[in-house]
Length: 493
Picture 1 (spheres, rainbow, N blue to C red):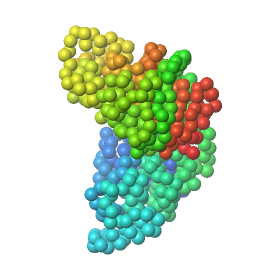
Picture 2 (picture 1 turned 135 degrees about the vertical axis):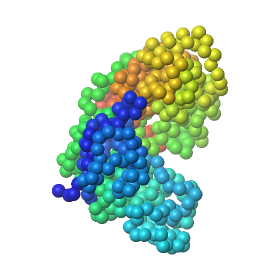
Picture 3 (picture 1 turned 45 degrees about the vertical axis):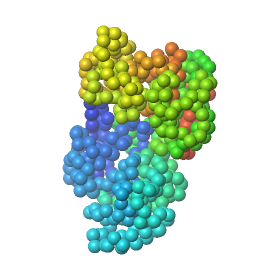
Picture 4 (picture 1 turned 90 degrees about the vertical axis):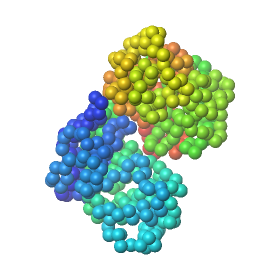
């Protein structure tokens, strides 16, 4: 048995009364490749942030080479031998590729302090060429696209020798060629006895290098198995659970006429997207990180611009050039992202409930008796037990989501776009949100439900569209049950 590098015991994390990690126990040995699987919201990236020193308020212990080390800051993680490649690239845009590759750390294979600027350009170009990365090391990083920046990060990683390298969805923006380069870097590091902790939705490309596979669900680590015992069917059951459609309060509603349609929509994030949405329908949209699903929502709302195609509402062409135009046309946008949602954390709940976010143009709330009465009415319907003068900064994730829902419930919206609405909320609040969606559908509203959580989509939706590389790759229908079973396969194939 290889030497033990990392041991996590009884690790838990709670933020604003929401349990994000629950009693995690995990071991990683030296020179081991360990894959962590789980759907979006399972807690994978939260665990990565704890190990990267970004969440200091965890409970439990983290031991590195037999010594307990509190990972209270990113510097502490680095000094303990842990380097993390986050989902978002972490390069300096104003510096060249060469300067980014040779930013000095204690984990460089060789000291580079003595190299001149010219020597760094030559040395980094050799690294790029050896990895068949077709870039000029003198280029500034800010001129590179996301995939090229990811390649630069892997070129930099190839020069380092940490004890543990954590990779959080590293292949999300890479094509087959880019992924092959990344895997070559990983394989070379494993030969140097570097431990790899690889966090992903898509396990096929990395499975041949894996020693162990772990699965997370709802903040808990529920399964660890040797890669030699890996079974994709059983692992899928661990990721989503069994008989998952029965766990959701799906309302059986008769679908009406077409209320919304996009035809051949193209942008910088996706291409040739076409679909229709019907009255009282819940249409799910899913895909891996980088598939374009959230950018599609932002484009429909007018936050992002599209280059080709048309949008129709009630079969009439709609000019959606801004979020306020979308709102005026009856489109609502509910997201777990507080920045995009326009939730004002420093204003009271009543002000938030009656403001359609940063795009509405309404600057003040009168706090009339009518507004307070409406707030009380919808608080009861939403099971939201907060005072209208309370500040959302102190609310739980579920309470914030319900406050946003209240805002849109009191609007004239007929088309609702929910973008990952149940992220970071507790189970009880998730159920409340599902029931609220049913309430909308029963009143004739149409819903686009965007999520990476296959379980909730198959439990709540009439149809599901799978996005891959910016295009619709598959359509599943509730009235053809076997298609729902294929959704994850089309996400990852």
